[in-house]
Image (tube, rainbow, N blue to C red; front, side):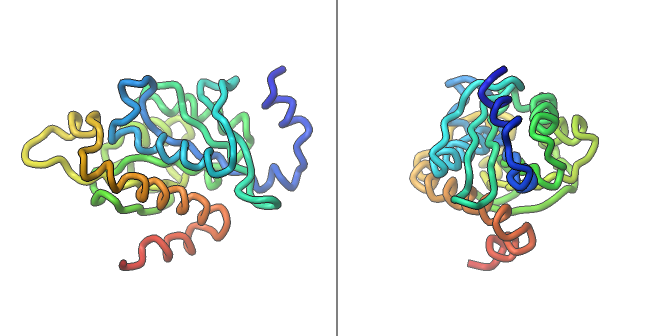
Length: 208
């Protein structure tokens, strides 16, 4: 029995009732680490750093970091699936079963072409908008009604193929603004678990 299994067996029911699964989407491997498509995993890294947690191998096909937003606050199970983006559903489904969390306490952090770069938007449910990671997760969970933290990467310039655009690293000017964007997205996750989705939307969707 692994460390996470032993911890689960000893977990306080009150903690279990306030546990959230946060999944950062991306592709595995160092060659993809800086890609726009991996911004969800970058946010997962930021969250894990904030709570002093380290990603470790897990019984599910993911790397997982666990900790609390703050003493007495919500517990986060932060995951980065080992699968490629298009097959994220299997790992997320396995994590949901492991953590025994309902869909409304699953937060998926992902890149979003239809939102300007350096912008964060929040929603629950809805379509996948052509995002194959979201499509596969909705299929595996048999519901689209999980929470999404949509991290804007903007549309590709000119006639560049969106598939090529998302698999390229952020450009120079974007890299300078990226730490602020990752911080905003991590703040959004914390706001959702602390204050609820509606309050978080009011905060992050307000005009600048």
